[in-house]
Image 1 (cartoon, rainbow, N blue to C red):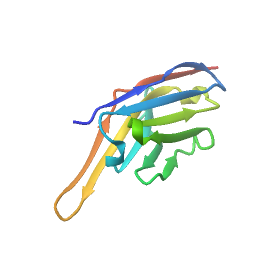
Image 2: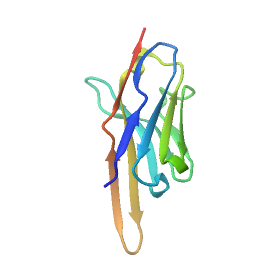
Image 3: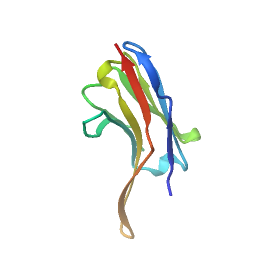
Image 4: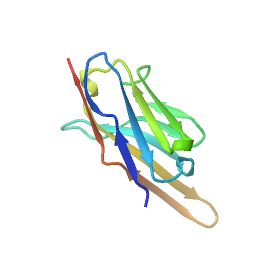
Length: 123
């Protein structure tokens, strides 16, 4: 079973920065992609940023230019650097690992989730 543990959340003023970390229990190279999602009260969970095993990144329009996802394969860790934070960024942030296999011998598409870390941005 894959386990993901987020850290780095907290309270920060608007305009400030935070770096979230997601430590995985196994090699992140094994996953098709890893990403960060967030969920604010009363809203659906949304993709913030993702990074594929090949290094391709994708960002929500609302965070482009402010957030950056990266990884350290040796540490089995994915990061989310968040700069120029806004009150609208306030949410619980969740780490996701997508594990896909589509071959002649097996197929699956699995998602694993961390328990989340809270980010609160005050104005």
